[in-house]
Length: 120
Image (tube, rainbow, N blue to C red):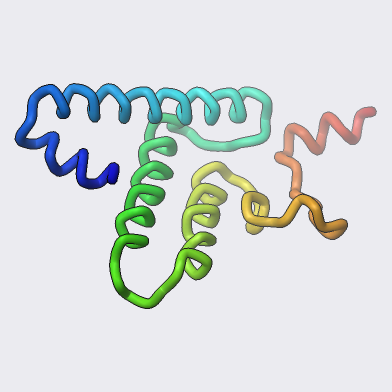
């Protein structure tokens, strides 16, 4: 549905304004989350805005892909968004897709977090 709204917004000014506003809000929220993570030492990225845009582009692309008849289900592509976000944010592989309910879930802390934990 979102991809249809984006397409139709090219021809409908009111919808264009709404879609643009919503995209700006999503990007702003994600960018702030990334900035907070960088500030706390959990994420590493030189450009939180660019990271937010790249993550949203992958998520949007996966949403569009989910609407195709390729025979590849969402489970086979879910890891793509997590892997890209991990790379973009300087996180260890598997940090965003590991199952936190499993006892083996041990995400690697960011260097600043590890240093903080080592001093306490």
